[in-house]
Image 1 (cartoon, helix red, strand yellow):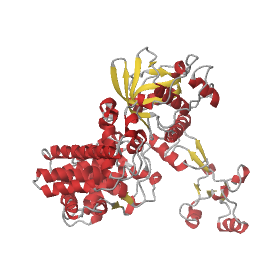
Image 2 (cartoon, helix red, strand yellow):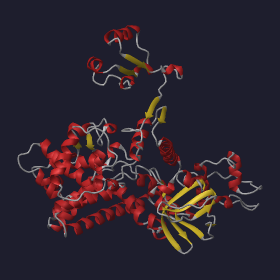
Image 3 (cartoon, rainbow, N blue to C red):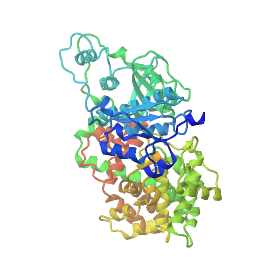
Image 4 (tube, rainbow, N blue to C red):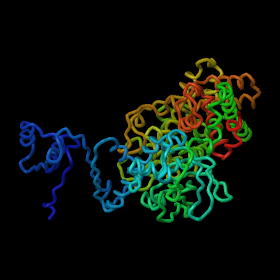
Length: 608
């Protein structure tokens, strides 16, 4: 019976000549994209043994034009037909298929569930893109035109765009914005009164539609996210009840309420049904020209002298800097200075999604252990291997520490795992402590952890504390930012020059592990406030002054989500927010005032 089983590969993985000596079957894949020339086919046949069989993939012109850019993904279960694809693997697949005409076909035992999860992932991506295209609540309400004598303003607008029976979610969001601008009094489905203190910011990432809202429901003041759907049952359709990211939701806004919903943690969410408020009595329509009914700052900022706004932003930026320095000062009273700086850098490498696990990693694996590895006569490559084994092993992110890892391990992976097995000086974190899903390759935790090993190696002679503080001492205040950022840049060699994680699906075409943008963020948020605190603790007033002067003259880093939101909210120009200090000022106002529901005691709401 064995002779009836024919075994071969898809293509010639190690060249045609050695392949023909071992196998009697091959699948020719390039014929799908382009028919080979006749002389090429004749040569194949002549070089192969008489009993060798070629299985030819059908030419794509049968179903598509020859110029078709379509990509085909056939998923047979990776290491085995019974394999179920993880969310991380589906995330890789989404990135591979992004912006292409793609056919994705599942053919494993769990194909039905895997395909549904992949569809949900694609829908989530589209939802994020839709949010990015939305204008801020005060920027583009649905236009009002007078003379509405036939019913409510919203119904009129809905009729105008033909959406009464076919609403898109983005339109429901605009209706919600419209009702807020109108000051409409609303209640939850449970009959509790609801008042929006702060509507939050449009989310440009995974999760609910609006982040960091402040809502008064009955007598309770609640802070969290707001999710918007056409129907409340869309919550289950989008599988939010299985996603812990949506546990931050404190209000579910829908056009039609047709189902009670639960968070992933089992809690119920208050629901507001907009359908009840889309009409109004005949006569004078609602007035929509006072957005300051939501946030008082919108009424005052536009009329303030430019000098007052600038002064307020600079003052808020100074407060944020001093608050960070105070936290470092408290750190320095209980831990070593190098460890404090190292923790700060690690937290910054984690961004918002992975900040906590990066801080946990820094606590479990102190800087003194990593720097001790770099001492002595070891080569740079050997130092990197040992530091990466310790970092990634303690993080729980080596291949052997992850479930369902079935890929072959290369030489570098094998070396790191052997080194980790020889250490085991600390208890490893669990791999699921990390946010690996829908993270950009350049920001992937493994790649950022590896960047830390290169950064420590770069200051092998002096140590990272002395090396970075010396740069602050030496650079001029004017244009010193260039040298500060250069001191944090990291480029990779070897395995990490072409990978953001372990495995075949993690290739990347970038040598940069830590670039200018992230370096600037670390300088502004970590290095300068730390050096300010270090100068104070060690009685070096000139160092303290130098750190603050560098901050005050530091150019604005790349625009971030909060800055973009606050400039829209306060209607500030790009030319006004032209420094790191003012950018940090906007973040301070957002965190200390807006998201705390303190709009009516914020100076920008009271001035004038």
